[in-house]
Length: 337
Image 1: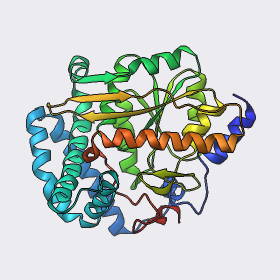
Image 2: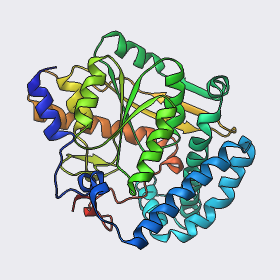
Image 3: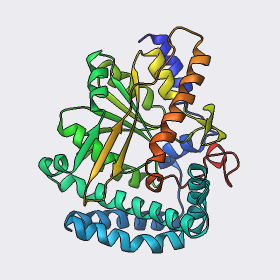
């Protein structure tokens, strides 16, 4: 990969802009907080830590049952999030209405609670248990990509339990770099970073540090995971996604084209069994590496959007997208301000 490509990646994939909320959030540790904010942040972090401790000492069936009991109350208290989920679900399946729509949105909250519960339990689970509860279709696509020596890019939606897949991959000796959205308060992000690092992942916040981390991982023929169904920072590529125009990140397609790296659409689904997970790894995106770069990136991002649609349609109730994602969604664009 050339130095010119390095500069291009910094500008297009992981810009740092003082006017961008995600960029400001990544630097928010330097911002003075009020005593009330500090207390709220402390209680938030303590709540996650307590939940994690309880989950780690609780048997799987009990933990999963407790998560299911808590989910309805959370859905009821977060009305705006529930309504946003219902908008997204209707894009996936316009036939959902009334009671069926409400049931599907509740299932999304059930799934999200299961995600947290299982993520909290993962560090204490044995390699044998993780392997026994995980299956995958299409894993040969990852192996074939790594055989070429340019690394592999896994493009994922916010769906199911991807941390379980990351732990399973790490147990098999694969080094994974995961680019994630910064969280507030910073202490919470640091705690989640340690949790995922303990699972064998290299966690990098979206921002200035992401570009060198991605390039370094691919040069070492490692795996990079990019959550790709939401344009967090703005400046993405306009695509048709579930029948409506929006933007998705340019990074996966651009990396694949300029780095000659396979971009594999991937999703990990919860199964009906306790701790059960099943991953689907799709074939590499058909990327044009000979034509004009901008045209190729646009075509590649649209191809990724189509793949993400297919992966999400397999289990839309496991899609953990609680934020506005289309221009017609209330509050869309606030993340860019």
